[in-house]
Length: 200
Image (cartoon, rainbow, N blue to C red):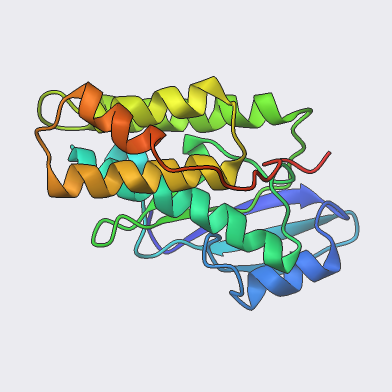
């Protein structure tokens, strides 16, 4: 992603507090954006320097892919502290930027509305599957287990994110572990309070 990307929206799609939060860079999961208002529309100018699309990130190691997934989910959860709610913005590869040095994720904030939690998780699953396809090397047992966890959709995003982070740690410490080892690492975390992952 080079420099800036512009997107034009119907006026009123962004709430005033959302524009303030995004332009002041208060949520690190979203790329900085400035707004130009016109009579019936407004243009969002996103600053995307330092990020590349997932498709341009090149081959990923299993640990890099899990780091990216963990960064994305943790950032989405943190954004809710600023009333940027999960389920009210788009989640897909087209709006995902990757910092190649840190494997941190950032999103172009695009107003969206998912009809239900399952729909949002399917989009997250597609992103994870894209990471799995681009992961270099053999096996990738922990990454495959992470995709399974998202696909199952039985937990809130906080628990999903925690389990993926455990898999990331497992992959970093023991990159050749079997799928059984990774399943044990992800499933042995105890009970934690579940967030809905979507505001109805």
